[in-house]
Length: 191
Image (cartoon, rainbow, N blue to C red):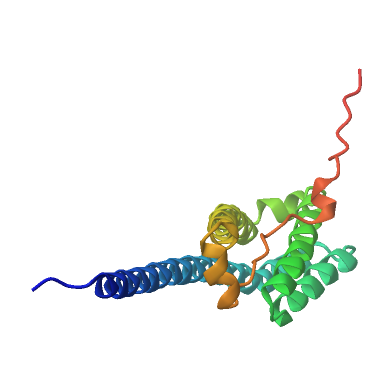
């Protein structure tokens, strides 16, 4: 029995539609995996940020014993910590954590004027822990930005963009450094 030309057209069309549907599903699944990977990398950062925030009250308490004249610096650290703890969106957390990082830099710079504080074993341990967390956050931030970049590229490339727009896969923001971090450190060498 020989099939007519019309049957071949119908079978070809069905095959094309089924293949297109499977291809769209494949794109969708890839985008979901990339979105979840970016979410996971942000969650890893969020855990480290919380650990750092948890160490700060202990650090401030140790510093208060030695730094009676630096109440303003300690208050800035506490305010920045509270701001970071209260942030709810990723963008707000990133901005608040930037302020906290700046406050910590100021605190550690001021501690240079207090040799007794720097000699305190508990301070050394806490400073080392916070510094270690800062380094881990920087590493994870790089991984997060890589994950977001891959996701953004896929959502903007053809044909993925058709599925991404149709199913509302929105562009995500990279974690950017604060404007103050872009400024020159102001190191001057005297002759």
